[in-house]
Length: 373
Image (cartoon, rainbow, N blue to C red; front, top):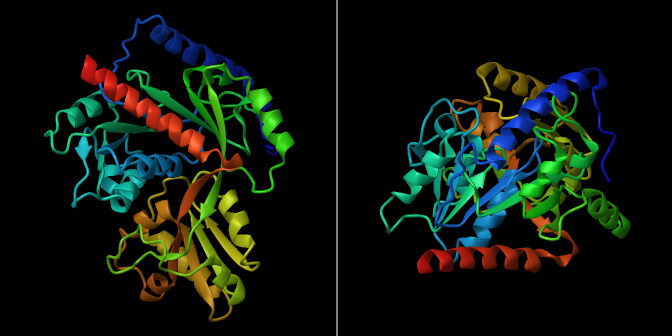
């Protein structure tokens, strides 16, 4: 199922040294020489052991949608590439610069939840649990915290991209693993993400066998489902309203030309999806979590202006869209032509009910234990 994974064999000696350092750190936690703190509320970690995108934000949003009807939810992230430090609770004055693009995306998308950022997850959780009782979270979702072992989650969910499965990869810097694949043992749930729609049953079996999970671990497979294209500059309409905008099929029927602007770690899945509807497409790729500049906007406009025809549009990701909102002075033509493509997680093999049940049962059990304690 995975593609040809590029391993820089010349860097394998450095990967060995890196592995010794990571292994020693993990042993210090295993031997309890470094402290790992547990909390009385359900703390669910959504993370990976690779650098690059595995779909953490869409999976976190899936958990928000699942739990929000019944519980008060908080999402705690480090706020990668934000221009601030310390603990920050998101509010109406927050921006990508202050809390990071992914937390800001979730804050805009789910106004009912609490979003906070802090590189010190223990401090962040303590601050969340010190909030007034009427808003104090009942469930905390830790975004990208699998390596943050100073917190011991009540449940860990580990994601691995189907295009770069952890058992075929190598440690940094030769590969993209942050720690050895065997450390997947810390997760109770593993999810193979970004699976193609035409995945054959044998691929599920081969991948499951190769992952070599323990009996206490559960394995799931997910794919991405893209929604309608939503205007980025939408005059304050809710970003959760994906019924608005235009469908991908309308691009195909209108023979639209598309300029894709992306600043994500792994854009290939999105490129392949858009190519199904827009055979004529330009792509501008920026680094992951890229802070767009005025020069970047000029480059986008120049590329867009060069594209022939009147029926053309700019498509970006939801994460990039919240960063582009920092430029209200953007050219009006670009504003009118700029759309983002929302994405949601779909569980394969009709296993969404089983996954949902595991999460809901876990949350209920932790809450029941905290009441009895």
